[in-house]
Amino acid sequence: MKKLTTILLFLVVLVSFGFSKDFSFFLNGLDQHPEILGGFLPTGSGIGINYDGLSIKDGDLTRIQLKLGAGYLQRQIFQNPVTDKYQKIGIFDEFHFTWSAEFSQGFGDSWVDGLDFVTAYAGYQGKYEKFYDSLIILKGGGGFPKKTDYKIWLGEKSKGQPDSIEGFMARYGADRASQKIYQDLAKDNNYTSILYTGARINAMKDTWTASRGFLLDLKLSLAPAFMNKVSTYYSAQLNAVGGATILELKRRNGLNLFSIVFIDRINFTFIDGDAVPVFASHVNSLGRKMRGFDNNTFNTTFSLVNNFDIRFASPEPFIRGIFARLNLFLDLGYGAGYILNTGKNGIKEISESGLLASTGAQLELSIFDTIDLGLQVAYLINGSAYRNRSEDVLVSATFFLDF
Image (cartoon, rainbow, N blue to C red):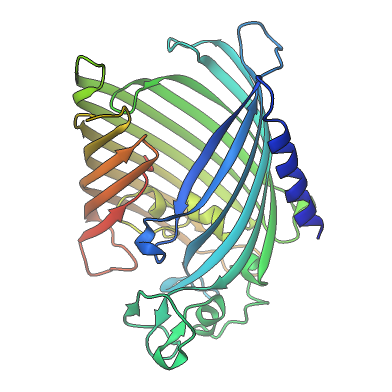
């Protein structure tokens, strides 16, 4: 009840603040469930509000930002909850609420009009998760399937069982409540509080069809034990993006005619702790950052990734921000260290290291650089995808441009 009251109070404050000229609303991302209308219907999003009425330093932006989000999403887990070797896949669903408050202060002028060169920030994020059986039917009565039937489960148990956290644990003979790898999944819900701070340098001019400059962001996060009953971890993430427009042709009305842009992204992550939750390992996993590989795989404490794109943008026919785009990409990634949640709570330390590489193309329709609907073909140069271990060429739909 206290958690629900906190969320409702946060929403009331968020909305009530919107009736002032110093406030502005924004959409806080989109996410999807792959089994609901094939993933084409967003099932997760959020709203945010910025308050820019304070001024600590003339000419530099002082901002207070509040965000509230919710979503119904799919999660995948691969780690054996007993020995922690990657073997069988488990799939379940989650419904979550998130809320956050952040204070930021800018310093100096960027070469891009209207932007501060350096921005320091600090904040708090809360996350409440409720776990459910997957929408995926497992053929064979609930054991680990050789094949999955990607249809919404309507309770027809004679045609198979829905995948679930309990089913995943049962495949290894593990007790959900007492296993130590997935402590956040021991019960049907979990609450996590995260403190974070960081700084970013913004010298990037991005007009969707053209990018020039660079962006650098360093973020430190901590989910401390004194604020959490289960999830306890810390992480450091450095994200650097550089863009160069090689060719840009404009129509008379200012809309894009054709452009070629080079984008390079370097991401470094270190994450560890007594109980790293699934959502944190999902975002920070090496597999998540490499196109063609699976989310929540190669979950080592350290990862370094380089994503390189050559982007060809077609004409914007009627509205700025809606256009077709072809991305040619090359991803290189290296992970090392202990597999997450090993070496803690009586679990043996298991180390792993390796190099992943993939290349391919994405053909998509970009809608305001927020939704990117299309098709991705990835060739795995080194390493394999856990869901398709014998395949080197993987075809998938794209919904959002992550890089």
